[in-house]
Image (cartoon, rainbow, N blue to C red; front, side, top):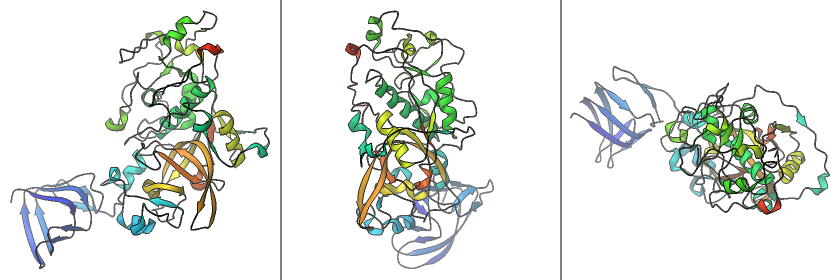
Length: 440
């Protein structure tokens, strides 16, 4: 035969009819589709086969046994781990996975978006936050711990000010997404809704290149430095409002800008590259032109400026006070293999993942609460966090993670920022953002 097409599963045994045979196939090409695992099932009986081929083409999504194909057609096989493994799902819940909580207090499920992906792919391209090279000393907050409620959700306090979950795709850019979404929320809150527009993570990925690696990862502290030095955000939604403001109220600035999502849409999630920066650092703001005809460059950045990021102490109540007072914060965390399968409940590491393959991620904390654990027979405290893997993952893109125990390192490095509005908004100019895009 000139070609052997193996569909779905390929490895040691081929099942045909009802009896095992040992065969040798000489083919010009072997195409393996979707998944390499242990068995290939064709009908109901096993065949042990030896293949001698002139060319072996293994799809790179095949994350089972074979991780490399050499030019001479010999497959170099290793113990490459799959991002989604049946054995791990079985341990996380077995037949009840996705239906009842496991003994760690959360439900796991088998996401099709992760099928056929290697564990290394998930760690590299679904996370993307590197360890910092900037040492920020934590600030000390003055507050009464008794004022902190047992549960809090930023979406309830600041309606239509908290942006929805986004999807970074297969680009290791959580450093940019967590930074931009926290900045988006803080600007919306501080402007009382006038600036409730989604800012552009692509702008940050493509233009913040100093020590940052685009889709290969970046540092959140450096991202905030970029927003402070070059980034003042202009949303074009309320140009008519600006036109009506007096010259005194419009204090123009000469610094560059981070634009909104419609002006600079996200492409790296599918292209897997950071792309060319469309807003050169040396260009003046007034020369920035958006691809969208609805956007025209104006001196919008005069209204606000991102102040330096500050670090919150790892104490639980400090983090709570900052969220309930000023809005969502940015948190860095470790991501193990089991986290990719999280569906609902209060996450904590199962200890079943490969400890040698761990990703570093950053997310947005938007609240906290308690949830009763049938397994522990007591309430379990949690943080409510927004991920950047789209709304089809977790609880519509959100997840709960144990609070007060530094689960997965989520309380180690908490960052926040103030927008630093340069002018006061007249009360008659304050408006709620009505876009369904914006809020979650």
